[in-house]
Length: 274
Image (tube, rainbow, N blue to C red):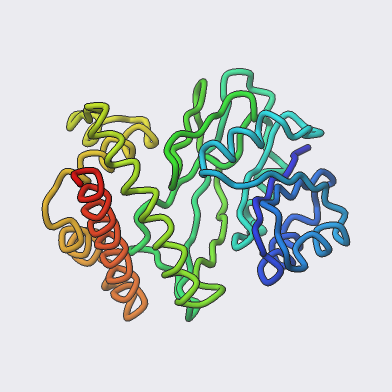
């Protein structure tokens, strides 16, 4: 069988639907950052086990959870409260023969949906995520948008993990990404201070999706005009326009988020110089 890990912070709106999508599991863990709404009541009523820890940053928080939560089963499916396990993914998870001792994690394809229900099939930048794994064989790096580092071979599992990032509205999305921009800028300055280098070869040709994304992101942060580059990349290269108005709007929001990072990086740099 499988254990489920759900990260929460004031998720009374989204958590019921998330829990409903994994009701087939008998070992559900809600890993909470001291919610002050009805999140914990909802979790308890669903029979979930609750662990609480004050949030510091994404990688530290997730690494602590994997190291300290007592899962019933050796394999864990990690999801957020605004995500849903589709019927196809559930069936593939339950029928999977995961007795293969070599594979330590599985990539799962996520479908991001816009506020109007449109699947952002083309606009979505990163469709595959390492979400099903042996907790002792995975670790996270980066303060925000963490990179999953597996200690062993990775395979791919069919079925979709459905994601609703706009479930709480545009204001929440923007406020959340302002916080992400703070952490992205802090990491950018930290990398610059340490002289961290990134490889074009790995960014373009690495067969490891996680490694490839890591080097792509690192190199991208060095480019001038990143917000415009990101918009053009999403609209033209990834063909976000095929997702209609939702795809174009989403590409514009992602470009604005990139501009938040640029502004925050400049702000932090100016503070250091003073």
